[in-house]
Image 1 (cartoon, rainbow, N blue to C red):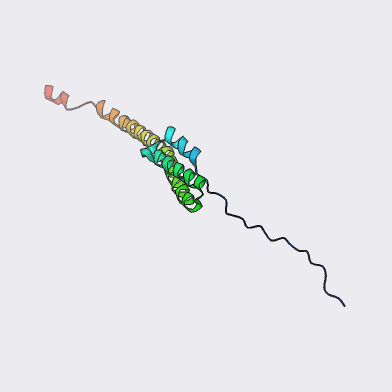
Image 2 (image 1 turned 90 degrees about the horizontal axis):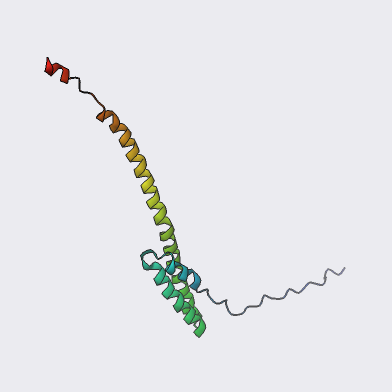
Length: 122
């Protein structure tokens, strides 16, 4: 009995050079122009340009390093620029609610009639 059967040969995956890192330049330009929170967008733009320069020159490891920094600063700039107005809006809304409750409580104080004024006239 022949237990051998033809096996399919799977081609080994081609291992080429790792893909070039992304430079996040468009995201950095957007953060610099529209949402420049504490100049983090400008810092991200500087690292994105450095990453692109290193990628063009062929230094993939340095390009990956600068790309990682550009992504980090872009994320911080975007989060700061989105969360700060939301936080400010929430503070304004809670302040208005607090002031309206305070105004409602003070209406009773200002409309209070002193009953002791009748006793002084007699």
